Image (tube, rainbow, N blue to C red; front, side, top):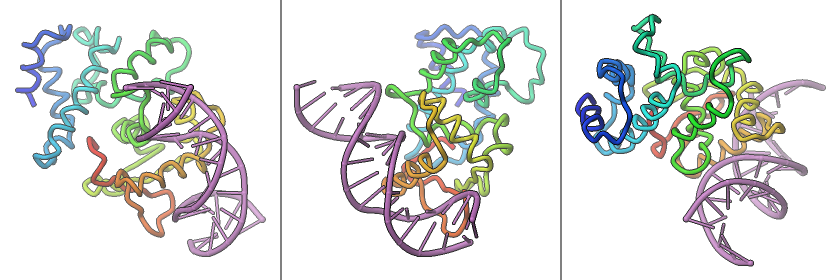
Length: 198
DNA sequence: AGGCGATTTCCTGGTT
DNA sequence: AAACCAGGAAATCGCC
């Protein structure tokens, strides 16, 4: 991972000015990375890249060098979807958050499973809103389904989103192996072989 | 403009 | 009875 970061640094395609240790922390924090099989590595690299892009664009990280927050918990990887919980005052206005989000998207808009993955990786929502049932198996439970659906709606600019509709989209994932069905477990889903980065 | 992927919306029916 | 779960069918929406 640090190798990857160094490569990225040397390729000076980015404006990374923060100390490398920050990224090593991030890498260390990226727990899933170590458990990935080799054929998944490329995909996880993309995930990490997304996250690092996000971090480099984050106003919080720009000032991270003087940050005095607990270094044990980088405010980084987990911040992907904290935008909606931020209330008025803060420095991250909506246009900024939109730009940041764009860094996490391959195409135009983020996919539902990626949105959920981001929530699972964010302690601001895990385990309060969504939590792992079995991290290694990719099983998770949506705790506050109404809220999550609402947030998904916000993400897509759709105020009419409901859990019913969101869950229909999730069931379509069964067909594509992005999610696998978990029988007889209400609100429990499982990432499938076509998902990654969790 | 048309096609396509990824949902979104609506709905009927079954289960917990 | 309220909440979920399963999927089919059709409509949308953004993107190429």
